[in-house]
Length: 347
Image 1 (cartoon, rainbow, N blue to C red):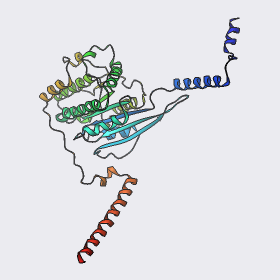
Image 2: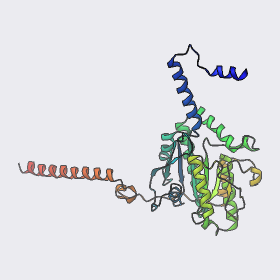
Image 3: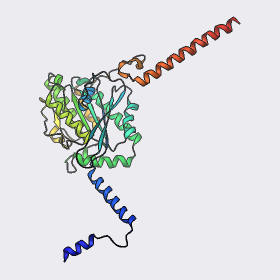
Image 4: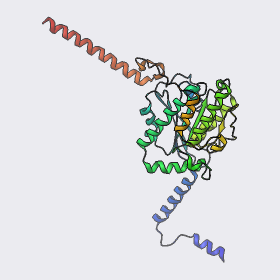
């Protein structure tokens, strides 16, 4: 009898019109398609950091490109595309921005964030471990630039909501949560040129590792030491980039390593003030303590060519052809003007 009642409940209501039934079918279909769609269709990774620390190489490996790396002078954009598997799969796009220099970079730092917003934004900060005397100078410049861009282009409400999301990533029950100054988007701090860092004095290594662990913990970031010359570290870094850009793998950090004699690897929320061996602190004091141990030099100046348009790193066929056409038109105009002036002088 119950089966009969169940079958009767599936029969269409005689009072329903064809339009009503069609609307139900369309609504159900959209509901099913929505349930099959996982994650955002578009994400953004902003790669910035020390000059010559390997940012372009890291991006090329993430995007499976064999391009010859050249110095990045300003701000460069590229993207990756991946199609998810399964029924109703969609194409996921990862926007990748790279900042070439930290000199006078505040306005450039704003561009990726202003273009794509905070909701699907992530930052990869690449630092040169082989230059401990520049490490805090570069890191401070980056953090100040990011914080300035956030305050300028994001509402207080949006920032607060996204900080709550990041607290979930760090761990809502983390013992230090109330002492952290968490940024409203995922950040991975990358210690680049780890192969060169291995030869640095052991005492300096301790100071560098303590500083980077402290600042990563303070802002809710993950920390990875990396060199393209080590296959295991390269794979780990690529997994981390794929996690930020496409959400897969869901857990790119398979282990934790904190020994300063080896490559550091600490996932989001994987550290604590007690493990680092310091009292709860903020980024300003972290920088002051590190600079007292290892005096810092200023940000390195970047040589900008007189005409960047002639630099091979800025080659764009369509734009170059248009510029050449305009240059020719300008030369004709100048020549005509010069001839006319000579004629008027004779008159």
